[in-house]
Image (cartoon, rainbow, N blue to C red):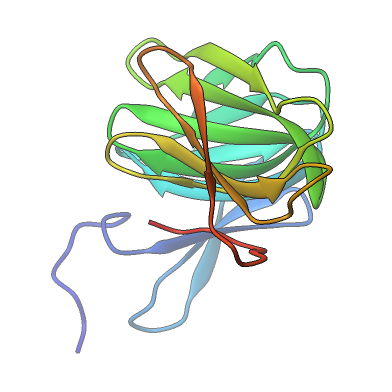
Length: 173
């Protein structure tokens, strides 16, 4: 059944070969939304924007309707951004080598500024992130355990560790 939603409200957006592509799920048609410079490593949507992370550590905020780059956000992290997650009030990015990332940053969508750049405790690594209503979450481990769920408090930047007792490779909320 065709949707009555306005363009961009229900469409899917994907990234391929330097282009941001809009896909209509009703009829399968696709169209180029924007051409993006740099190597995009992950994409998410939230807060009326599409968020793209790049291998230079930066984040692009793009309008899903016009394709216009609304903001280019420097996270202050030189390692490549490899994962991104959105929740109301925060965009979370993960930086480093896939599977053994060492840095997580929080971006405030209201100011388009990075806050709380946090490095995993020595000897540890993050492997995946997710955004929850009250925090950023990462799965990973350290030299003693590979079963740690990390919680990053968005107001203080503090990290809590929870030993789950199981090896995790991905996290969601």
